[in-house]
Length: 454
Image (tube, rainbow, N blue to C red; front, side, top):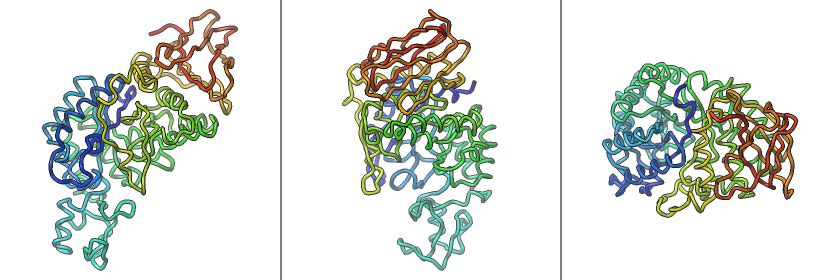
């Protein structure tokens, strides 16, 4: 099986985590890669066997206005330091994917600077979309051009141009040969040309075995992109995870899951509860106790789970006046020393990471629905006679009994796989008449195992 089928990602936004200046001053932030190495090692303790890090390359501000694709952002450090970072991750058994911002560049990008200087005579004018020399903009360029999201800071590249495509392919080859990366997260994949994605997939399939392509796609039918990419960001499930709990409506989560399994024919989508562009889960949930439910869903549903740095501690973060920087804070791991013992949410994520490594059913098992009401949800991941059952309750009943039809025989062992985790509450479960009977606390969720361990 390819590595990404059983991946658990830890997502790092490096410019934020390392406290880099928001405007590029050309100077390294002291100890940036030491900090990144420390956090990647911490992610390994949480059971994360893959790192998504980015944006990484030289830019003017937030990293998505790329100036030089082949130089690590000077605020972070050097190419050599990043190569050593990847080596360290690989030594721990972690794969590394990076942000690939191929839809647009920053205004400092060499080809755009040449366009500004030489206008109609620029060798690079066809590298950009909708250049109009009779226009103007807020920069006083005396020309206009297509951009991303209405932001002239982000100049749209013409990725249908064969030269631009080859430039990007050469960049990916550089990243693989110089750094040893294992895949890409394609920024703004929902507006990238489909022929470009098709050609990129053909190129990377021959470049490195099991090189993973995951696209940032927010709305629409993801199957369009899954023709050429291994995975896409699952914004549909992201929304369902928090609103399904706020509204006490597990039907939203279950419907989203069933729709995706049926529509995308088993493709593993990249699931997340928050990221560098969305408010933190702690800000979105009305009931903080539901962070447990969301974590278990993320790690046990069909898909590729991910954890955004800091959310294992339950930190808060919300967009402010249109700025994403509050979602991308500088953090020091020393401030969370002992969290595995003292913070139930941190301990839960570590336990779920271990389960993903120890229970193949969570990566490869068939998804089977067991029960569904507005406030109760249960499903199993089944592989080779082993059933891993995730159970969720958002009612306020002191305790309630749930009966689920399963394949196990009476007297078969039932193990609560999260029983030893700090913050765990007692759950009593047994098999009776081919039913799993569960006596469960109010507003609680856990993971049970039926059948012999592999």
